[in-house]
Image 1: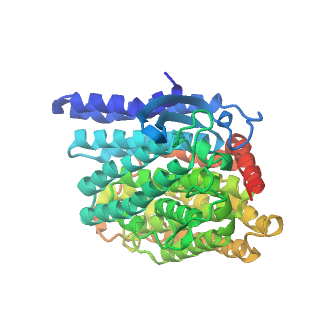
Image 2: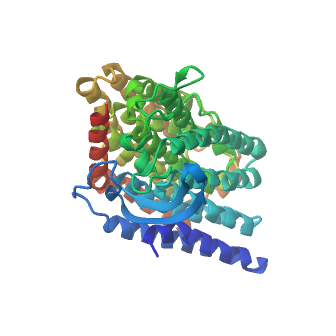
Image 3: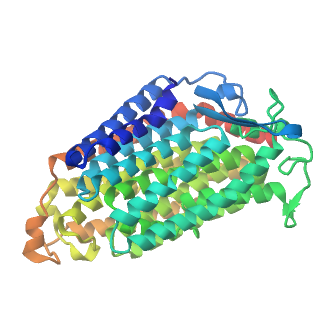
Length: 535
């Protein structure tokens, strides 16, 4: 069996075991789920170690660029005069996928450990968790648009129930809002996907295809088809390719999330249980960034170039708006949620630069934020599980009663604000470097965007340090008084073994960014060269 197929469907095998076991064995469900994620992590690390770099893969449009490929006929329907409907089970990864794949597998292990706090309806929770696990891994491996869309949509259902059934007081509102926002983008994505299918033919078979790699090659588009680069067809009076790009961008931007499509995120985070917050921030936001690179930039490079200014502007707005909102928050989890909006703005800014530095920085920022947001939400959950409160102003002097917890909070805060030596510094620096270089290389972004982006780092330092000062230093003063002081015990063994690997990862990526850059470089360079050639 193909290693990627095994990686994708391992969670379902364990999910079936959880589903068929009697409820009397409920205490074993968390161990089975943890084992599933550990097996996945082992497989992804093996894939990472065996991923080849430095070879000439023949450019971004060549299927040979992708490794560990499996392509099998899936839906082969005879359409008469139109030929056959060609839908394949087509999976494979390149440098853009591998870094996010390993990060995702790592974060899922942490989320499984965080899930031990769940006490009700354990079978339902862990079965949904494992279905979600399969879906997110499938998104990063799919190279057939139809298969990609199925995994992309499959993420919705488990998350809706995980938030709506195990969340906080306003969980139904947050779950419905998240579902409707994401579904809005996905429905229109389906229409563009169908338009692309009808525009592209596989040169080997002559059939219309959902093959994403074939969609990246302008030579495979039928003359006069809806999304052909030479076509002058319009939709509602607008160029069809521009409409296709915008629709797909909005669908992925909701996931990122980009301002003003971000409003589902704070509500979902505040109401979601800790493991679901970890998956939302650590993985789901990266699906959006990955989609913009893999689909929007690769299939519509001409429109991405023409609209680069607006993409960069949205990135800058997200950086500054998210940071200023984080500065104003009184709830710790909501502050972290808005910081995610700000940090993901650097991803969009790096992508908009369409330079090697910028796109590499965007990938590094996604990987870094995956680990850091996981660490931050886990730390927020530690306090909430003890006293069921997250008000920043309700705590003071925690350093004296929870010194080990405070040490990890300081690591997470200083790493997140972009301190040199940690992963976020590398991601943000390269994203800004790409934005700055873009003006002189391709003239897409003005210098002031890089300057405004750097202000986001300053604001990040402000809200993280202010939160640190208010909650952890000074005389002990807790809203719950002595009852809280007794309940706020320091980290236990499970929490330590969860936080130590996260701290080591953000430090390792800060000191050795080549762990990511060496893997993504070939794919990013091929993408930029193809992009420049197409334009």
